[in-house]
Length: 338
Image (cartoon, rainbow, N blue to C red; front, side, top):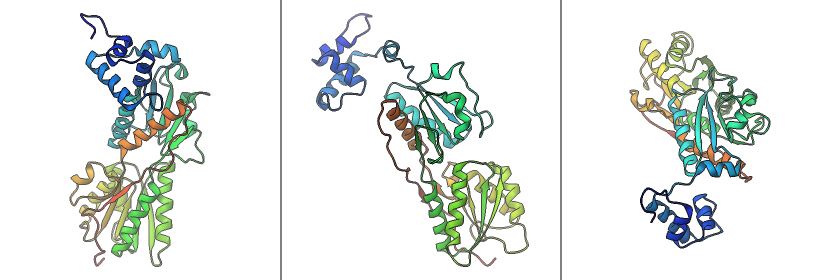
């Protein structure tokens, strides 16, 4: 073990683990698989921990020509879902010696201004969530690797696209409500022009349209509780065939529906079933607790980071959408007598 205040070196680790410095570099650079044994890799990691060894990232980055910094572009910093995306991405990045800079698009959805004097000089890659691909031109430049989250794979300019299986989540919610006997539906849609919300509208219309006797009305609302309250209060006002079920694009919209129902003297779920999408902490704070589609935000961010690392290393990113799950709680029931 190194003594005094001398910082331990890779040579010290190699001597302690009884391996070559090249093996130490492979293990600590997470490139050991297929080159050294798992037992050797564990011995190197144990030696590094015992010695308190930390690799000189600055020197390594100069050799590699990399900054080991990734930009994660999200619509907002105050959204619980995107906090989870960041957590997942940053956790995996740290295991590979990368840092993640979080950057919100100033307008939420729309063009993001370049936060650096020269993004190409300051970043190794970009992960962009819920953004139009052409809004990222200034950040991506001509050569910066880009991974898109929650985006149309057919129209993405990114080197890879990672999606949650939103379409299946909507199908699960629709099948649940149809199975309960609902036939009159209101879709409270987020008033945002993006691929993910277009998928929700398309899948809901297709799923309900396949069952005879169903009706579907779509009302758009800002993605906020107050915006949903105003839109839902108008849509659920007495007169005509009031819907018995409301499918919301987001849990915050569902919370607005709860408030509108209370103002109109409607009970959830006796008079009105409500579903959301996200499974935010808000879903279990509502009374009754909200039936919603659970999206694993941290896994989403992790998969996005995995895809970018694969692109940077010249590997094929993992394919397939991330599964989602309907969580049935107290906000849905068979339709009442309305």
